[in-house]
Structures are given as structure tokens and as C-alpha cells.
Amino acid sequence: MNIYVGSLHFKMNEAELKELFEEYGEVASAKIIFDKYSGKSKGFGFVEMPNEAEAKKAIEELNGAEVQGRNIIVNESIERGERRRDFRGGNNDRRGGGPRRDNM
Image (cartoon, rainbow, N blue to C red; front, side):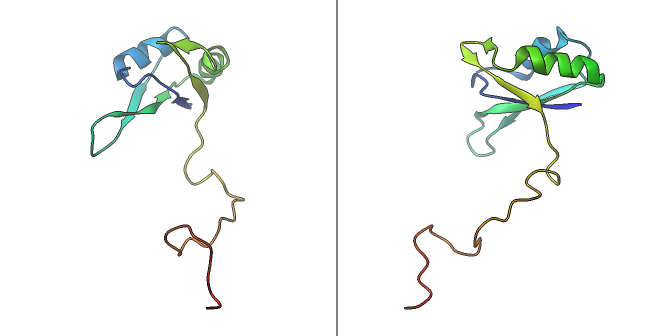
């Protein structure tokens, strides 16, 4: 199961993230997402746990837990193609975000 972990301390590394989840079972991978320009952590990451029961227990017990002074957010990750299927969005071809002025 792929798990989203948010609100991480910006100095947390992938080894520490993996170690945190290994208390609940086998961890196949732990990845923190970094900004490609600054190289700094974006404060979130993903953990892959092959055993679904262990993953669900980790989610249940770690969601809202304090880790390195921050209350982390932990939930099942939703694949990109599956999220916001019902989202209609706005007019994405406009730039700038100001009011629409079609009749000028």
C-alpha cells in the first residue's frame, strides 16, 4: 500500500521516515519529495508497505502523531489518475487569476 505522509519536519530524511514506519511492519520504500530548484524538502513524502494490514495500522496510529515537533498527516495515497475524478475545475486557459473580461 502506498501511504502519503504530510506535514513532515523539513530536516527529516528518508532513513528516519522509513524507521518511523518500520515499527509497524516491512517498509519497501520511503521517499521524501524535494524541490527540484532549491533542493529543500517540500514537507511531504510517500511510504510503500507491502502488507496492507500493517500499513493500515501505521496510518491509524501515526495520523496526527507528533514527530520531530510536528503533527504529521498520514493517509492512504491516491494514485494521480484516481484523484479528483469528479473535479470540474475552472477555465484553466486563463492566466493571472483576475476577473474574466470577455465582454470588453
